[in-house]
Amino acid sequence: MNIRRVIYFRARGSKLMRFVNAVRESAVICVGQRLRNEEYTGQIFLYDLEHLKSLAKEFGIELFLDAKSGQMFKVLKYRMRYGILLGFIFFVFFSFYFSNTVVKIEVSGNNRLSTSQVLSVLEETGIRKGVFIPSLDLGKCEQDLKLMLNNTGWAGVRKQGGRIIVDIHEIDDTPTTVKKNMPCNIVAGRDAVIMSIEAAAGQKILKPGDSVTKGEVIISGIVNNTMYDSVVLHSIGNVRGLYTDEHTFVQYFVNNEKKFTDQKIRRYLDFFGLRFPLFIGNACSVPADYSEYTSYFSFFGAELPLGTVNCTYDIYQMKDIVYTSDEAAELIKQKIQRYEKNFYSGCVIKNVKKDKKEYDDRIEVRVRYTLEGDIGVEKEIFMK
Image 1: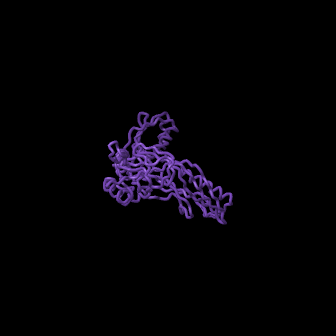
Image 2 (image 1 turned 90 degrees about the horizontal axis):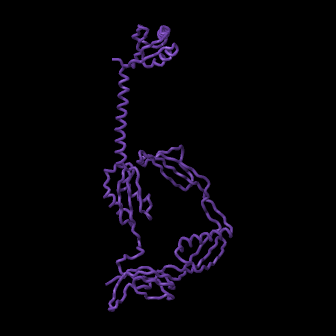
Image 3 (image 1 turned 135 degrees about the vertical axis):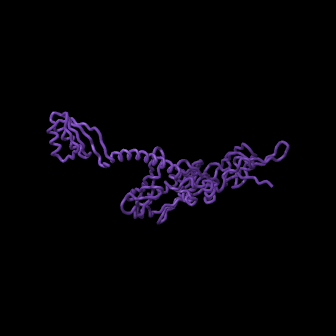
C-alpha cells in the first residue's frame, strides 16, 4: 500500500535529453522512468513537483501530469467531505443550543425596582445566563417573582429564542385616583382659597372665593334628584385654588465635594455571564464612579452569549471646595430654579417672597410661594 502522494508525469520537447539528464542529476526522486517516441515518463513524489516544473521551464519542456496515487490523497479528499459534514453538524448544534440557552435577559415595566434587583431575584428562581431554557418552569418563575418582589401585581416571563423577556407591573402604594365605578367626593388636597370649580358629575358644595381646609368636601358625590331621593355617584370635576408653600434652601461656604481627575476604561470578555479581563493589573484601586455597558456579538442575526464589557471608572478625589458669598448665593439661586422646575411645573407661581440670612458657615434662603394649581382630590365614599 502506497501511503505517500505520487504524481505520474509525461514530458516532451526539443531539449528532452538535456531535461532527462538534469532530472537524474537533481535531488528529484523519479522512478519508473521511460524514454520512447520522444516522450519521457516517470513517477515522482508530490513534494518534488515544483522542482520538476522549474527544470521543465528551464529547458523549455512541456510537462503533463497524468495521474496521482497514494492513500494521503484519499484521506485529504475525505477530510474535506467530513469537514463539511462536521461543519453542518456543528451549525445545527450551535443553532439548537443557543436558541434553547439563556443568552440575554430583558426586563421592562420596572420603575421603582432597579433592573439589578429584578435580575438578582430571577437568579434565585433559576433564571440566569447559560441555563438550558427547557429545564425552566416559566410559570413557577412568574409566581416566585410576584412573591419575592414587593409591590408587584403581575409578572410575565416568556422566551424568545435565546432571550428571556420579563414584564413587571408594579402596584402603587397609594392609588392617586378612585376606580371610576366607585362613589367618591372631590375634596381639598390642601388649605387654599378656591379660584374655580368645574363639576362634570356631582354637586358643588362650595364656590369660588371660599376658603377651604385640607380634606373638606368641594364637590359631593351624594346628590338629590327631582324626586328628592339621594343618589350616590362618582364625582368628576376640576378645582383650582390659591395656596402657599414654603421651602428653605441652604448652601455652605465650604463643601466636601467630588473633584474628577481622570478616567480609566477597562474591558472584559463576557461569556454566559462569566467575565475574563482583557487587561493586565487591577481594574481600579482608587475611588471612582462606575458605569458599564455590554456589546454582544451576533451570528446570522441571533445574539450570542459572547461580548465585550466596557467598564468606565471616573476617578475622583474628595476635596473641600470653598465658595465666596456671591458664589454661594448663585448656587442657591440654581437650587431654587431646579426646585421650581421639578415641583411647580403644573402650577402658576403668583408671588415669591425670599428671606435671606447669612451665617459664618452658610447662607440660608427661606422662600414663600403663592401658587395657583389643582387642589381637588378624589376620596371614596364609604357606604353603610
